[in-house]
Amino acid sequence: MSGQASPPAGALLLLFDIDGTLLQGAAHAHAQALRAALHAVHGVDTTSARTQLSPAGRTDGEIARALLLACGVSARRIDERTDDVRDACCQAYAELCPPDLSDKLVPGVAGLLDWLASQPTFRLSLVTGNFEPVARIKLKNAGIGHYFAPGQGAFGSDSEDRAVLPPLARRRAGQAGHPFPRSRTIVIGDTPRDIACARADELRCLAVVTGNYGASELTGADGVAADTAELQALIADAL
Image (cartoon, rainbow, N blue to C red; front, side):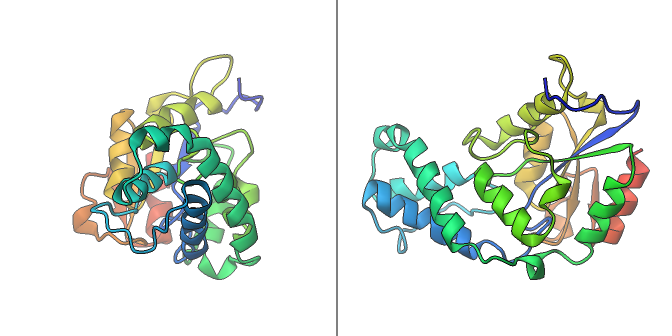
């Protein structure tokens, strides 16, 4: 049980991605922290590691695994030290993250979140590949952390598999053991992988072109917005 009050009838649960959707250009310290953690835990320098993996839309654990495999670390060793990498990354990020990330907000995001939070028909939550402590610090330092309640959402620290995250977020948003209904849940992201994780849970998805992908690469979504104004309109239409 989430401990939150029951949502009004017809309420929508909005599961936001972070990087590329809410924030732009805020991943540098995050990448530094993850590489520092891999060095501290596994003793490998991943700065020159070459993988075929694009990090956009992936979980921190999935990215870490790809880098470590590229450096010759065995899958068994990776599995054994997963928690250590997570903890080391979160500690490093707390030290490396700039105290003010407000300049990294996607234009219009603060206004959009303020509008959504003022409407009783919306519940704001997260589905992100970031480890949860990283996500919380990132959003707090950007000035928007208060829009996303603790104990809610799903994160890269919950699973390396992003497809697992939307069902978990719905369970945390539900009441008395009943997950928030699929029909009233929407994933909001900026990559094809955000769309894929929504479809894996049979959810709707709204995409924005504020990240690294253009509209032609996001056609699998139920709607594609050029900016936050268009996204607000799509969300309003979803009611």
